[in-house]
Image (cartoon, rainbow, N blue to C red; front, side, top):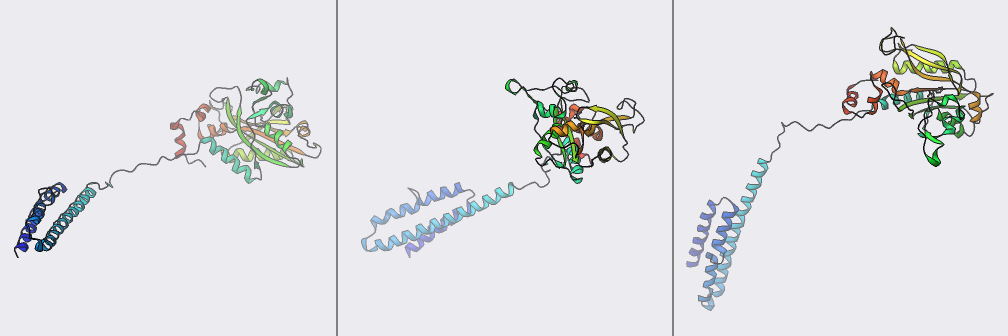
Length: 351
Ligand code: PHE
């Protein structure tokens, strides 16, 4: 009876105190008050030695019950506080969905990539294969096999970036016409060929319309019964395809050592539509490419029977087409990697 009362007192007291706690620190203090070194429950246990032996067992039981009850109540309240604190934290950390999101920066295709793809798509649709050649090329493939022997004056305009020492017979290719020599050499059956070879070429040039490095695309078609008419139709078609149906195409006789006859091809100036302006130097025309029927010497050097096969070839600067099509006034901006320029193509609906 007495013990029960004592226990009730202790527990009631504890409950009263626990009602007031706010933090876990408050609970820790109460815990010390009951279970600490000088705590109420601890002190009660020390009474054990005064208890007569026959009652010790029961007193021990009583002590345990009280201790367990105290521990249980303290743990319960600790849990409640923990939960409350977590909920408060979560509420404070809530996401502000009205904040603007972080934009993902979108890239865009470089104008030269766009132009190159347009050329490739067109020619692939006509049954051509895209051929890739190296930028470091032998003197043989760049000149000799194209009917330009050592000392030929046609070298002057292109005789530029040679390698040193034991590689002095190699240079950065000055024209993609190297693909003609390579493709013929690689074709062991010496049968028909239909390729375009896009890629970088290098020359000692540098002004608003010329860069020491620019992009050409070469075309080569070898087959039986190929004539100038095939070349003309092909060139007209691709100039109109890239620059627009209104574009007119003009062929002028010209000279290249590896084609005979040779032509240079002009298109109507797309800035003035042919009336004459500063871009076309008041002529209404702009030169865009060189072409011709492949010289029999070149076919023979490539291992082809020039009596059986004819071929046409053309080469054009793709930068030129990009400049026209996207109204780029200075070729050097194409290679400057200035984001302000490149970002323009993010928005241009070009095709
Ligand atoms: N390779 C010539 C140049 O770079 C262009 C060309 C290619 C001319 C093919 C005729 C045939 O100027």
